[in-house]
Length: 95
Image 1 (spheres, rainbow, N blue to C red):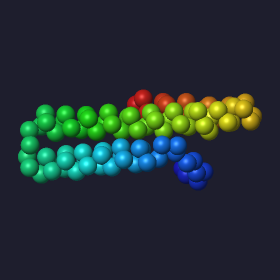
Image 2 (cartoon, rainbow, N blue to C red; image 1 turned 135 degrees about the horizontal axis):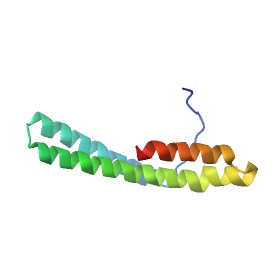
Image 3 (cartoon, one colour; image 1 turned 90 degrees about the horizontal axis):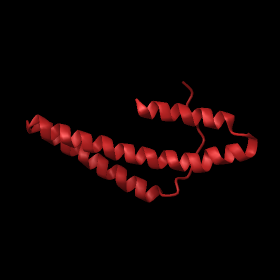
Image 4 (cartoon, rainbow, N blue to C red; image 1 turned 180 degrees about the vertical axis):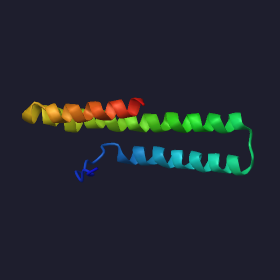
């Protein structure tokens, strides 16, 4: 697999980073809950909240990608390749 080295400045970078830091804190909380032998349902509830928060970040980045990179590709050359890539990402996210 070849990693793409293109860079895209996120328009709401600070907000995204703050959200990811909160998620990071939630992850630490789950680790502590496991270490402290907390009730399974409480741990699963926190894991569900983390997944939801990550989905929110992913949707925000996906929206930025669609409105920026994909829109530009469509305007420049029809965007067939960019749309295919976008759909591939959406399929991955839906799993």
